[in-house]
Image 1 (cartoon, rainbow, N blue to C red):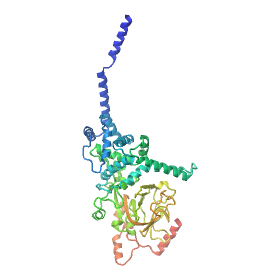
Image 2 (image 1 turned 45 degrees about the vertical axis):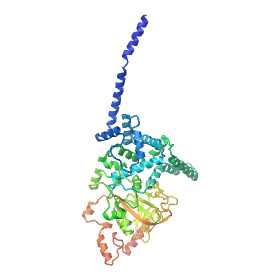
Image 3 (image 1 turned 90 degrees about the vertical axis):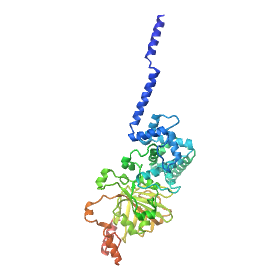
Image 4 (image 1 turned 90 degrees about the horizontal axis):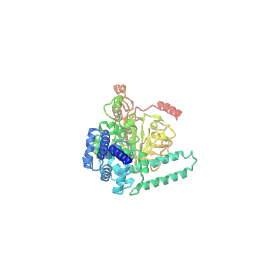
Length: 519
């Protein structure tokens, strides 16, 4: 009996010491509130209000642009607000998409699109590109989005799909000689793997695993940022940090600012068209490779440069506007700053090069730096960096020399350049044999020689102003243009309009002798 009483008392003590169900529920509720408070702390007051509105309504609080893809919107909404709503999960997902670089939430949206619309990876990337590139362009360029042809996005989509696989193959090829592998066998194996991946990316509904997806997106620059931009415009009425457009441009969430064309150029190109040779899709791809100080300047950089506004990309030369003239081409380009040169050939190829250093007046040597790159933007995107080559023949510009090639060149060597335009501004070549020795680029044109159709030069980072030169009234190759035009009208043919006086025969012979010593 005594033992039974003792056991009863012990059981009673245990029961009395246990927390009640109400206390358990209260503690759980308190923990949820604490977690929610911590998650809300990542957002500004304005962002909190917009996130609450989206959570309550289950749809964007403002009308999305007509170009925004509805299937992408459906996948985003299904991921953020499933049938069983949970505020903490919603805030966690929103934070991981907009405030971090994690690939997992992108995969979850992708899976919702696969489940709901039976999409392939190629389809999903198409939705992201078609929705986000117009947002990127309008957020920073100062231009409005103008509808493009139905397939303009396709080249960028294919570039994103293939990028990671192609970069991995390049590394394997560069290391093949170390392992004594048969190069042809290695290339055949890589081509087969690339083909397998492209087939898998096109399969609908997609069978790509989370591990495969994460590897692909982490090794493909640009896709994660475009996805973030697309979600941002669904959840928030405006970008999360418009006060810092500088940072957004550096992270490719907003386009570099593009200078508005004058009336004459708008008439030639069209009201909302910024280039006759590039689409915003092309421009985005190129911007991924441009140095940060060509995309945007901080307040400090503007102070150092003695300017009061951010960098603007300016089409300083267009053969459509300025004429197919070598003199106009070089006079608009020399001594300006970092440039993108875009060339269209008579057979429709479009390619070009980025020069990080300014083009010099008849420098008879190769010069420049390893930030340069060559590119192709028609049908298939390609970008080849100077740092991957075996010499420093980054850029060359010369004319009026009897003993040296006269023309514009990037990479390789004379007569075998990665990219070359003769000083007649008609003929050019791209000879690789099989790769350019400076840029490791293939032949850019269909055949190794081409006929120039159109050229654009984009100034993407002007030189720092020289106050002493400005106060002295200028000078250099661009000075006294009006005087030269007057002399030509009077019958005195100038050596090269706007590029300085014609050298005497003695001066030219001295220059040529000096040039031979350096070649």
